[in-house]
Amino acid sequence: MHKITTLKNGLTLITIDLPHLDSVTTLLAVGAGSRYETKNINGISHFLEHMFFKGSRKYPTAEQISTLIDGVGAVNNAATEKEITYYWIKSAARHLDLACDILSSMVKESLLSEEEINREKGVIIEELRMVRDNPQRYVWELYERLQFGDQPLGWDLGGDEKTVLALTRDDFLKYMDSLYSPKNMVLVYAGKLPKDIEKVASYYFADLPTRSQYKPVGYKKTRQQKPKINVFFKKTDQANIVLGVQSYSRYDPKRYTGNVLATILGAGMSSRLFIQVRERRGLAYNISANSGVYSDTGAFTVFAGLKLEKVKEGLEVIAAELQRIASEKADDEELKKAKEMIRGRLALWQESTNFLAEYFGTNFVLDRKIETFEEYLKNIDAVSADDVKTLAAELFQKEKFNLQVIGPFRNEKFFSKFFSK
Image (cartoon, rainbow, N blue to C red; front, side):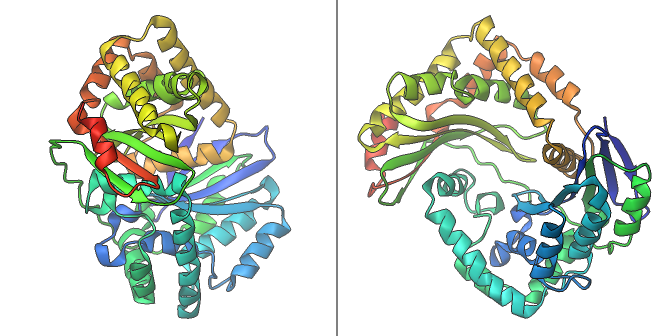
């Protein structure tokens, strides 16, 4: 399905040719993210992502870049995460050269003008405020701060207003020099590709400047002796909560069992938590479970937006379901359904060139290899009901829980009672 080659400057090229399509996604992934930051430049990864759209030597204004992209009906965007940043343009296949020209120019010759940096600070600050005003989003930043503490994985991805305002052009240049090297990047094309795609890639990206590269500071895991609770007061009409535990890294084989466990508990409208919390009791609209991974740790979480007057009941129902799956094996039918859901959802996602480009780019940047979909599903199929029960029993222990709440609550006292039972 895919082909991996290396350009002369060390940039990895991954091509996924889908000749039945008329479009192509061009994506450049970089091993850079907020966990590579120091405290004084927290937020620079996300800020730099913004700056690449503000003008390059060839395309000196944001308006020119957006006009060219809009002018051919293409779409573009970028995303910054804790361990990776990626930039993409999805266009009609016949406009591949334009997409490559714009994307390569943005990354290798960004102007990073002081005027634009200062102007964009206001935009970034408004984005941070927007996130804080959205409890369903902000609860996740607060949760990771609670679980991971005062180290890069626990810091807010966007930084704070103080660090954003203090960033200078020199900070951006130094940060780029530390991580934006071709050997720390992956270029992915997914869609209808020309036969000379390697030649196209070399023409536009083989002159990316060589820079240094360094690894992030490893996560320092501490043994948790008791539950951790944090309440963020905000006048809301529902309580947004994340209840979670520290779990396993992207390199731990238990991550496959974690995915099956999360699917049984909180994926889809027939999942245990959805049935018990929403359908049978009407305590929430949104509820889900997720098994998230980083290079050296992970988080198994349950998210819910609960009725204010029924928060206690909602938490009790969630806890009961977590304990039930830790003490009783899932039956064969439920296990089969979870695996088929994972397989079916993956089949749907594969129809998106953006998903394919993000999957292959992220995997190779972080792992320097690709786990194919067939390999992934083989590992999922190997998960047994005993594996799920054992993992749940390992994870769902009272002293390991972290509870983050956003709502009109003044302190943790009300929620401490939940863990005292």
